[in-house]
Image (cartoon, rainbow, N blue to C red; front, top):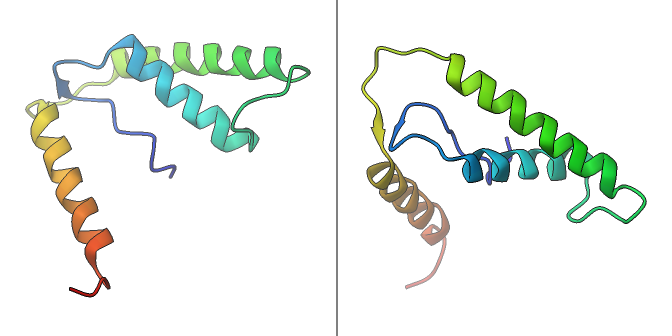
Length: 93
């Protein structure tokens, strides 16, 4: 999975439209292989982003869980700690 696409379900506060769009943008970039589309592909690229954003919004609003919502800041801190651990391995001190 693309490391830049973050889980969006079951967080407090709830996911924003900007976060859904950013994940959709990353997905289309990954699938297409384009970091930035050419002018010739821009319409197709942006249409895909719009459609994936809409589908993702529908998916997230349809999902149900009995699990308590995760705290965004706590999850971000855990991810930062994992990243620090992963990238500090093998470095000489």
